[in-house]
Length: 90
Image (cartoon, rainbow, N blue to C red; front, side, top):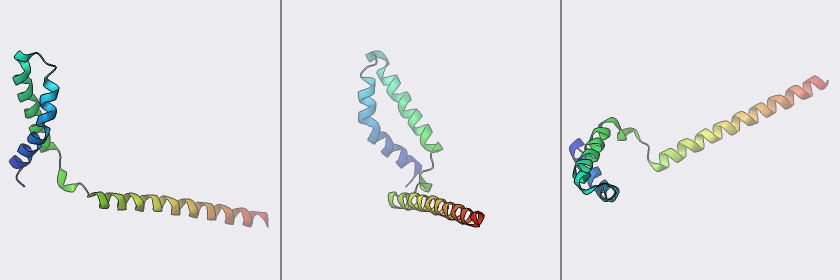
């Protein structure tokens, strides 16, 4: 998807929120503020790299792996503690 199309799609998706937000601005400034918001959105989309974002399932798998890793470390630490305690008693 081209960068221009991404920008256009994002602006279209945000259009209702932008319109709703500028209702609270005096009418003589609304058009300028709306244009400024759209420009800022277009500038910011260049800074965001959405290609490296994992899918929902990839993300949950990564988080589960992290949690499993922490659990294993805790279990290993507890086993070592128990071993050292038993060893020190004799």
